[in-house]
Image 1: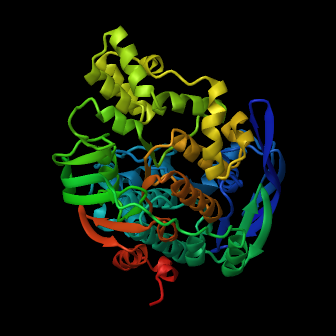
Image 2: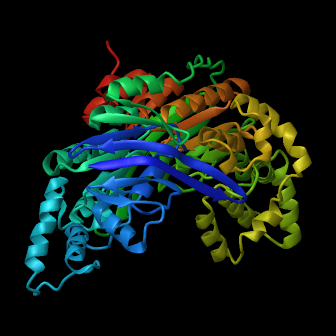
Image 3: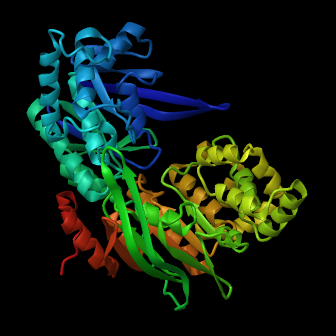
Length: 570
């Protein structure tokens, strides 16, 4: 049994001490799946890290099968704990290169000898370790992929392989942090069924952290509600989940689109990707789409279907093999895959948010907004051209550098290095706006996303998880872009925060007439925010129309039983 008694945990950031766990007590019985739900940033993941011995704590204690851990635990105590508990961290895909079975075999070997290694095939214990690794793969329904190269497994298969590796360490407690949260319904269903199967066969004490009520409804025997580091309530899943969801604000009405003006045309777009060991992994084939000014469109489909590729081709971050994408700028059409002087203006009026968006932790929101205005402000392109000319930088190179301001930092750094520059050149070409000018740009956007203007003077760690997301959205909207592209940036938000974001997007659309095109695996979010939904599978458009009908078709095609409640009654 696991018994947690009055657990207290603090984080010190800069000069501030933040209490993230405040007197938490609960227990988990043999063979029980305990679900933990709560708002983003409420301390859910921190509990798992403390129970695994990855994080120190300042008060209370916990006991796992008679072994007690206190704040002053020795290094040996922590090593013992880490052998007794296994954790699967959110978005962790750290796997060894090589065959799938080898990843598990290494962990089986470590149980015998204390470190992960591949034993020689002619060693006396190889066959025993190999057979044991296949047993664990069978537990997670991956035995048919035992010989496959681990790096080309699907996202859901990687998740299941990681669970098999955890099981190979023979833990007494299995800790799962947001299992399969960022995956499509079919992938998620496979992972959830794996967790159920493992629990049924091994009777492991299991804690599942997730902000998704449907996951707890499908998996958990009991649910604990954690808010601001304190337990609010615990009990039967449906009872606790209903109480939790009552915290959601009402959904505001869907804005009505008033114009029928086409602003983006996707013409016969094709893009293929290949992997040497796996062959063709994506064939986006002859896609034809149009998007209207002020339209809110959701892109939905299985993982790997081509949604992100389409979105990034629209922003000019990747170029198609065939076909083209055109944007209307005033009365001109600008094609994105070939250079033209007007392409920078398309990028200026387009904002994109990625799955892995993050605010700079040690800069105030005001400072980050000043940087954003320096990149996407009204006269930025014209001023950058003047500076580039003085520095002897061609317009073609400037166009390429401007594209990098929309890329994740590491990707942009690589490309700049190939051109012979450091990231500092971007600060020269696109200097930050004066901080004194920021307020007038921030005010209307902050109102639209329901953020107090005082947030400008705070750093990300000083505001809530939901405010962080809305602040990032405000940064993307600060220059009032005509087009907003969202690549699943809200995938790991709790439903209460997600409702706030949904309302914010509707307000933005109504206030600024922004065209919003977004990817999401959240069925309820698509229904709530999209005026139109497009289902993409295996590189083809399967359905394009009313969000309710498209979402129902997707759920049925995914065989996602955990989402049965989401199918609309006819």
